[in-house]
Image (cartoon, rainbow, N blue to C red; front, side, top):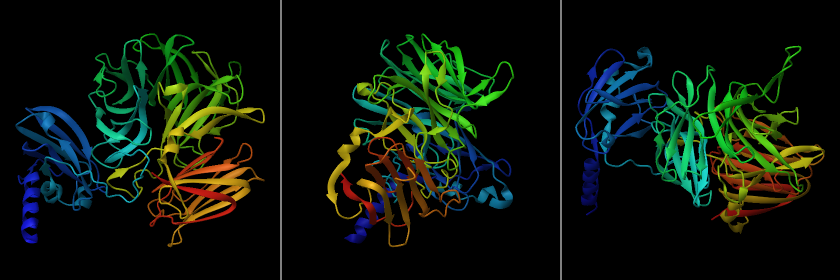
Length: 569
């Protein structure tokens, strides 16, 4: 009976997955074509991550209908990615494949494993097989993810778009993926939102809820030979977008010209847009979301008399992913503006990070009130931070990409790469005459708390009540550990992951240190399978770091505080 069941299952698998047995048409040492008779929904493309990119042009009726880059397997298959064949209609599809690697290292193209391993299937297995995939952080179902994009809230639903590679778990083929949630915790994958076109790949951007015309408008960077700004319109609450026929809507001669953040400014009754341009932010205004007027730039100031250039903030890398918002200062009747400026490289511990500026904005020009460089999060894995448009109750809810460009392509996962941070509410607070950005775990995270436990959970929240300096060590039987230390005298908080598994990158081991603005009385520590996020309960400290223990941390030692541990529901 058991043998019969095995035979039946094997037969079913043979029906659902069909290998392509036709030989490729060889056109040279690195160029071939493969004709495919469409019989099932997907072509499963075999990926080998250590190989160089191959470009696949999809031709139907002698017309190119799609182009993608994928690391086709040469002698080993790491995983498969799906190419949707049914979108091209019935009949034959011609795959025009160009390999870019050096044949001296990979051998003859005719012998590549990919030709034997390309398969048609009606399904694509997205079962999670990754021990490091987070339990309660947003991740793509498969493929690579970086910057969160176009986040907005409408009719009870949070929409999170993101930079996505559907054809591999490393950066390439930038597309807007899409997920939705009603509680900022549980995310549901949605169909692809915006795909590359003749203007280029789809880089980062934003969405706005246009209440006047009852629509959602997306702005994104078209990354072709030049970076230009395009828009797309959704009339079904973000489920589908139609690209504006007059794209691009904004152009520049600059090489780095990207990441449009748009918002409605009631103080001038117009839309504002902030763009990252090299090492400055440029501000625009518009009455109709189509015609944009340049207003001012921020980041570099020039003395008109001496010609001397003064830099504001950190300029050790390219500025990216801006955001601009008006926030309340805690305990006062004052409001000030916060300009978020992500930078790569140049972070306080190497690689990418999020800096910010506090000041005034009149709809035309942003003026910063401080001269020092300020970081929103003092971990090494907090980047591309942006907020939701139209968030309820006037809240400003931020999410960051939880990785670092120094090693993001090498972290030890395969089916997917990268997660986003837990949601954080932003505000402002004062300390010793200065105004700083407050970062507090969003209240929705309280719903995650399950029962209290006496042993360290693999995923959960740890609340530590302090009376002064405190040392917290998370460890496992292999001797791997992460050490958290609050020094009340020196007014610093540190996280040391130098003894966390890190063989994939020499840039990964580090100790991150943050200044503390006032005494910390309680820490909230969110641990997931591959991350630790630490917050001062009063929102004056944020530190986000990845960890990849070969076995989960199952021991905790607290000196100088009392820990209460919660499982995740």
